Image (cartoon, rainbow, N blue to C red; front, side, top):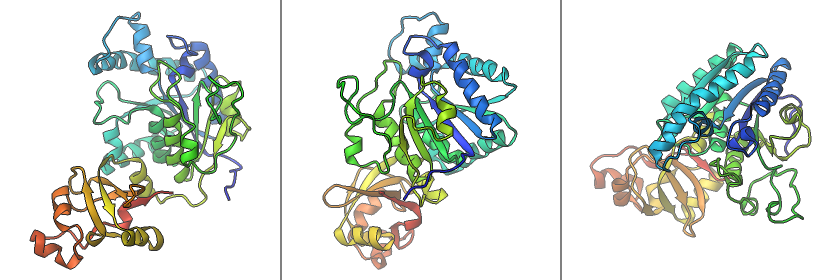
Length: 373
């Protein structure tokens, strides 16, 4: 049974491009001013605020007077490089009206997948908050390539919420929340007010992006909500244009769709495993291994592996699948793909005999593993 927190102490606010532009082609300063005022009000209530903002590419396009560019990665990075400074200057001036200082933190997926860099980012975030500075976070689009990108600010904001040990994540968009049908196509679509668990039925409700300027649709918001929910963080998807939406949600107003935190959140390292490393391959396991992992909390042994999929190095994240193809979980593999291919199905005692060495008796240790909820 989930309990509603009486008071939030730390809130992550994610603002989509569609919110900041009012679905136009340029940032709307009046909208940003109202949002900044609400975040300042939370700070006055003693609530820490972290802003995860989209809008760098839109700001760059506007600053350069809407140039005709290609859709190549280089041109998008050009716009991000120009627009990021415009975006942070805009937020800086708006928060200064409330005597608040801001600090910019640009992240890539690589920063979050590497445990050391993840902890370094966590330390920086903690220092900003400790000194009363509002962290403003965006993906470092000017340098990020497809291989190192998080890909969207919904998932980035969930990872930031984990970094900051926040207790609430607000995903503000141009939609009022999650509906039981697409409200753009079905006038009878009903808002779902609360989702205790995100299962396949909920995922099927997610459509594509509703904005030509943004990279995230409802699916990425559900992905973000899943990560945060499992880490013990309340999540709300709501319309950024709703009057006083940030203050209202932080004070438990019934706005949008709420995803209450799980009552038994994952421990900190497993939160990183869920949100950080990118999956590089997969291990298909037999029924006995599946039962050992899911029912008795055991580690994965070579004997339980029936198939190796993909190429991965020692220490990479791999998915764990049962023999019907369902995802059981994910974990850091202690052997590379070549080694797994040679030792799959073997008793642990035979690993050294086959390889000439070993990295331990288990292929994926339970401490390096996160199972599906």
